[in-house]
Length: 281
Image 1 (cartoon, rainbow, N blue to C red):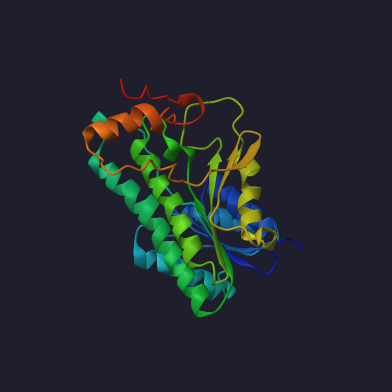
Image 2: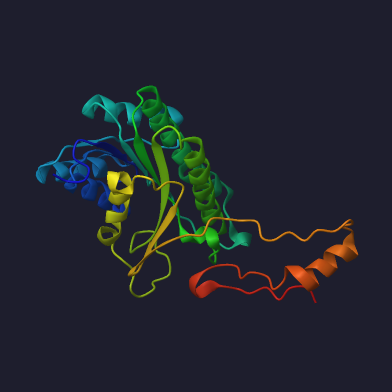
């Protein structure tokens, strides 16, 4: 028996790439999987593959950006498998552009799918789990780009929202038996980030999602798990640094604090794209 035997899991954006790998790995680990994708044919191909492997899979096409459709995905998982025990919020759009070349329609689409789609599906799953007093696990897919990466500011902002949502939901649901974590993968996909050598394949990343869905991850919540190249790690939680106290915070006081106490400033970005601010001059 696999670690997800007897569980019903919905994976969004599962028609290809990482989402497909998450769905197949969960199925191989014993889960019944509702395979969502906006491309109905792609969703059905993955569901069919799960059935060929001897598992239970059903296609659940639809756009997560539509709150009614997102709720319908959860309803379909419950109708087909009797419950929803896990959700992998993977559906997302990717976009690269320098700030002066941004497209406002594309920005809106990113927010509607990456942020609101995650919210819509998560709320529907959470509501069902709470109403049925069912423990569960939600895995939101974020990205290292929210730490800062060239030409991906808006995409990174949507993924930063997903990370923040993960922290908030984990706090809200700590006493409800529902765990909420995020996965930050770096893998070879259609998103076409710069072609660094050594990227993992989607299949090499998928086990992390299955682990977070399983009872092996009991007690783990509110975490962002990074899986990149040959590594596995946790992102540090955002935190407020040491505060400087004074009776007055006028311009000279602020300037003195930056020069004498608050520096050196933290680098921005990550990996090969870090920039170290000089600080006040």
